[in-house]
Every structure is written in C-alpha cells, then in structure tokens.
Image 1 (tube, rainbow, N blue to C red):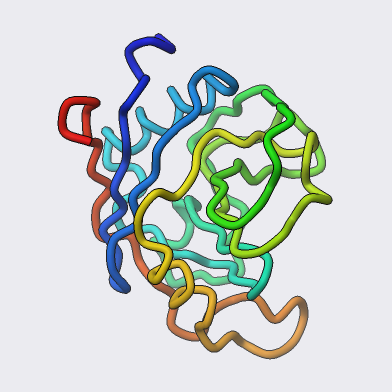
Image 2 (spheres, rainbow, N blue to C red; image 1 turned 135 degrees about the vertical axis):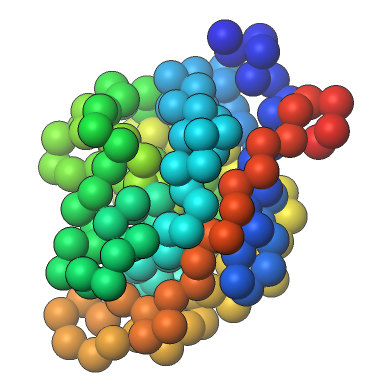
Length: 172
C-alpha cells in the first residue's frame, strides 16, 4: 500500500481557500492510508478547524464539528484508531501530524497543521505529511478571532473544509 500512496496528495477546499497536502507513506503508512481513505470517503467534507493557536497549529478532522454542539468539538473520530508511527521528522511550519488523546495509539481522524515551531511534539505525535500549497490560507486560519476563556483556541467563525479532493500521483 505504501507504494500506491507515493505521490498522492489531498487538496482541502475550504471557506478560506485551498490547502494542498503531500504525504510521507515511507514513515507513516497506516496514517497516510487512513487519511486518504477518509478523504476519499468524504469524511472531512463539512468539518471545521475547531482549534487554532497562532505560532503553534490549526486542528481539524473532527466529525462533531459538523454539528452546532460546540461542547463536543474535539472529541470525535471515525470509530477506530491507528497505532502511533513516530519518526524523527521535526514539527515545524507546514508539517501535518495526527492529533490524539493521552494514549499514543488513539489517533483516528483529527489532525493538525503546524503553524510555527513545535519541536516539543517530536517523537510524540505521528508526522505523516506536509503542506505544499496554501501557506497563506494556513496563516489566515490561524489568525482568526477566537472565543475568550479556557485555552482561547476555538474560532468565533471557524473555517470549514467544503471538500477533500484526492489527487492521484499523476494529477498531483
């Protein structure tokens, strides 16, 4: 499966513009396979970036963000998890990594795109890709006004993924 995913990209068409992601199946084949499958199945369509922290990251991929129950945002997944595939890839601007709970093997569908330096996450979260186009969109999303209180990371007007488009290697 790793060979079949080489060169595949996913373009997230969002309400703020497009984000194009390329993958690293050689270091995280199970996570790449899972993410591409979810994208092909339309799982990410309609989800929101529910957590934004300037200089750190934007987080999305929670199916609960398709609802108005904001208290459930950040808690959803696809109904399964993928075991960790840690590597020595550094968490820096543009890196795509899987979000998870305190259990390293709990990643499912939620992901984050690193906005700044996040080396403290190295070897603790599964890096499986990188942003190759749409850095201006990343900056726009992370610059959104957030709701005060708590962590202060929930956007007042979250950006929505309108469609996840899988670009096969020959199209990418």
